[in-house]
Amino acid sequence: MLSQDLLDILACPKCKGDLEYDPDQATLTCDACRLRYKIEDDIPNMLIDEAERF
Image (cartoon, rainbow, N blue to C red; front, side, top):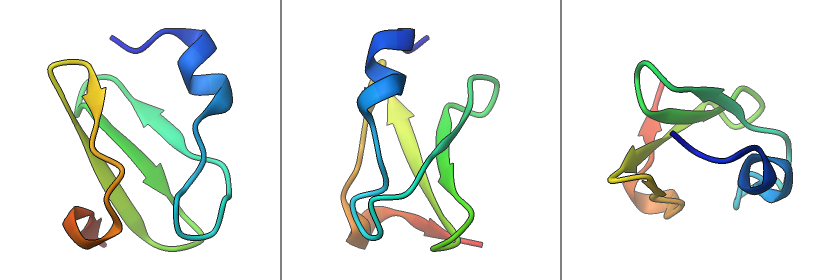
């Protein structure tokens, strides 16, 4: 589970937009870029090349 302090400062690395946190799926989603970033061991993987497109 990510802390609210961390969620408040995280932004999409591609467009710098807001991210939607899904604790059940352990992901951060950017609707603008249509990218989903995985969270593993409470560490967000914010690499654009490794993000899932949807």
